[in-house]
Image (cartoon, rainbow, N blue to C red):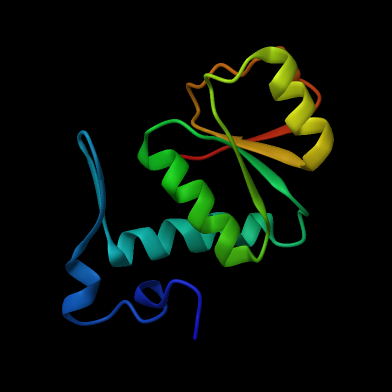
Length: 118
């Protein structure tokens, strides 16, 4: 069974169905497939990636793209304290962090390459 089968064949009526909605951002199945394919192509071979996990469509796109690229995603809760966050990053050893363009990341993530999810 393919991972995320609804995104494998995004033609016909399924393509136009709403897949994700956060506030004023709505993505159909075909839009989600398109944006996650583009990001997944950039993540292939990246190893683990950290995801700055805010309650936004950016986070959904980041996690789905990582999964579609076959890359483990390590969600990082923005409410986690600095010491615990540093511990999580040290243990998981991500190669980069995915975040929304406007996200301000804490010092514990300063050593990671950043890729903005647009």
